[in-house]
Image (cartoon, rainbow, N blue to C red; front, top):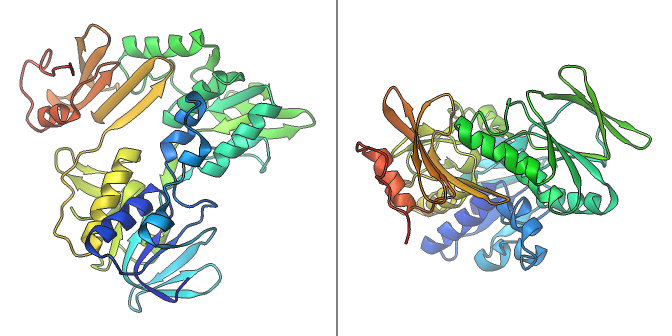
Length: 392
């Protein structure tokens, strides 16, 4: 690694890859240094809980994004950045080494939430490619897995494990799987689909702690019940890693506050991906933790860092695929809001409303042009039912 780079990126996920590519669209030669705590160079994260488990043709060699080769960026792995000296325009590494920058991007992503317990080879807070490889190894060695968490990662991992021969118990805080996100009839379908495919579901409970035993693990729930298993996967979401931004005095809120180009309160520092609290063109101030936002925010911030006059006018979508259910959503996905359900031949479209104002759209086993969804969110038109046309 050099002592100074024109572009320094802190974080080695998909944002870093797309930012490096965005930089190269406008600056073919400027030096790029990526500093990552990960053990692997940037990779396609969604595959870790989706295609690698369900598509035999999608193999591990297809996971890396080939960032170094295709962008000529230098990449330092297992390297923590501990401080930013904004006046000197330097970052400080855990080793004490200082690296100069012209433009600095914070793409530090999220830290997986955990539960109480000593580190164990039988416990994975699922996030990285290394976690995937570890879990694959455990699947070959162990039989019964407890998965904690009813969000994207928890449900996708539970589905992946049971489809690969494991016995799975899924612990969720919702009274019905998905009931905090989906209206009751869809939550019922979701819940029943998991049960039909062999997943045991414990609802209305949180995992409090775990303890390793001679022959496995014991997981204690918030009501005192104790469950036994061979291994534990924690899928309780992430907390944005904003400590570096906070320590350096950048403006923060729910995340690092940025403008439409992902520029922070310091004109030489940028932030994108999970940690960016940005003004969405349709939905207003947002912080989004999903791959579509990682890709698109990464590309835009890279271009902007290289001097391009680009703005982030894109509104990202969320998606998940489990068993025979495929859903996509833009905007709020909150079952406490009022909902209007548009029944279609093979699925449903759900409109989420707050005091009559359209806040989000869910596509449930229905294919619709997502730009049509964005247009409707930007300018709602009554009646909502029947408004969105399915792809032919």
